Every structure is written in C-alpha cells, then in structure tokens.
Length: 179
Image 1 (cartoon, rainbow, N blue to C red):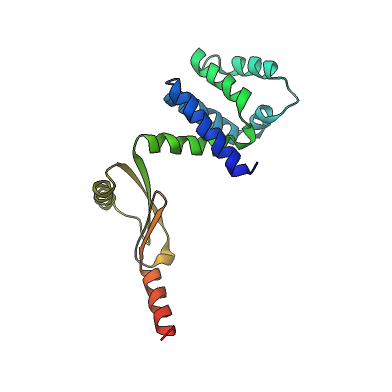
Image 2 (cartoon, one colour):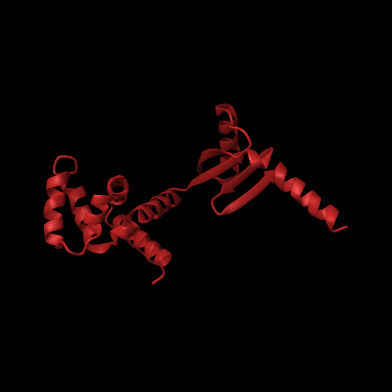
C-alpha cells in the first residue's frame, strides 16, 4: 500500500474510532504526546516500532514509563495505538489526525506569506476578513518571504490566493514576451 494512503487510512480510522467512543480529544492529546516524545527520542521511536519486543512487554514498559503522567484511559489509548498503528509514521499520522480534528470543528488554518512580518493589528484584520468569508474559526500563520517583493499569498485550506508583486510582475513579463 502506498505510504500516504496508509497514513491517511490510519489517521481516518483513529479519528472514526475515537469519535465513536467519545475520546477524540483524549486521543488527540495521547497522539500528540507520543509523537512529541518519539520525535525527540530516536530510541523511543525505535522501541515503539520494533517487532522484536512482544506487545505484552512493550505495554508493561510503557505502563511503567507513563504511570505517573497518564491516567488509565490514556494508557488504554496508548495500548490501542500500539496494537493497531505503524509507529514509523507516528508524526505524520498525528498531523493528519490533528487536521481531521480541526476540520470537524470547522477550523481553518491560513498561511499568509508576506515580504515583511505583519503587525498584530494587520494579522487580526486579516483573520477577521477571512473569517467573514469562510464562515469558520480561523488561525493565521504569517510567513515572511522576501522573494515575493510585496503583496500577499494566502493558503486557505487547499486554495492558494496569490496577490504577490513577484507573481504580478512575472505575469506582466509573460504577456509582454507573448506579444
């Protein structure tokens, strides 16, 4: 199976199962925690991914590690994940799962690429303007890229709106060359 399809399948299956059992937020927290630890510790990631250690032993070790920081429900979710997902893809599965959670809540992430950092007031104005257009909760991430010269590029969901000066100049150049 294609790696992306496999990851999508895991994330959607986890989301569906967690949602049906009303543990979607708890699942989100557990996935994020495991993903963060796995990302910071290669040995932990190898431990989760290896087939050489029996599941029962892994569960005992994880129980000892997380007994102080996770409650029984969270530990049960860790065990469920251990039984059902490929931990080699944990970080990507977590990102996809978090996106599914946000999408279900009607939340839209927007990336605003500008030549210079936007002020808090400009970000707030941009956020409310986009919010009125998409009728959803919006969070805006400002990314600076001097190569766009001016203007703004917005990535709203899967839609790219390019109002950058560099693109406008490129289009003008193309129209002049083609005449």
